[in-house]
Image (cartoon, rainbow, N blue to C red; front, side, top):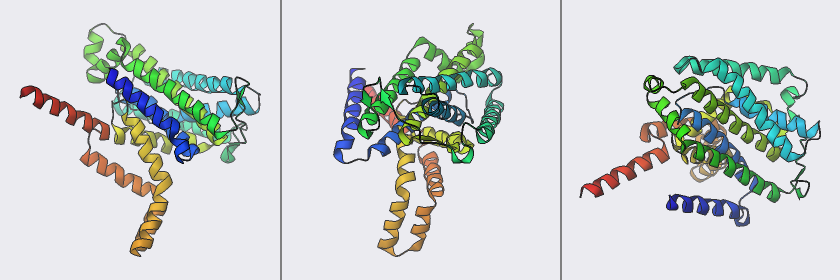
Length: 329
């Protein structure tokens, strides 16, 4: 446990000094927002065994709620963040009440259908700005003191929000409640036979996951000072599944690594393709760089074939096998 805590402290220290090492703060903040989103989703799929195809609804609803509350209602920034996460958690409660009585593909399809309903509501609602989105959201100040118009000030706020969300996931997983969630994932009928109210546990896990996904959406709104329909599309729900599977399903750090890989590819594939085209004089690389989704899909296929447990999952499995071999000797 001490080694794990030291690892987290070291990782936090590295992230804290990245802007001073020349890394663009907005880029890192985007990774942190998506990483929190992926961690929230992983709590539901990786530790409870519930596959949601509609998690973008919580990201998008919180983004719009925070943006509208801060811009139109004049909410302080910290209250806007809480409001956005609360709206997402409430929406998660409604989704959960309708979906948790089904399992497998039926559960996934219900969440997808509900998320599409939310998407079309955002598309037609006046307060969202339709296809143009909600633009010009003010970052405001934190507690009326810290000016969040400064990227550096906002950077450390986003860091703190991610740390808070990650701690909530970690504490949930390592609690008696989390052990019941794992039992539901492994064998739901047996957990039910032991006397646990399985539906209530699944519903609470769904609400926590939705609230944390909403916190990520609220934070993303502050970073990009806007909320758009892309936050609520089914493609975003697919993207968070991709992040989780690449990094490692059912691991704590896997979704963070998956988010980093996906965001890095989204931002750097074009530059890499252009550089390879110039070096080799092969124009196919240039077209490859323009097709980010194709490259991400190819990476996903490779990871699924070579790392079936995800990158972090395969590493942890290798470490356990190595420890077992050492113990036998």
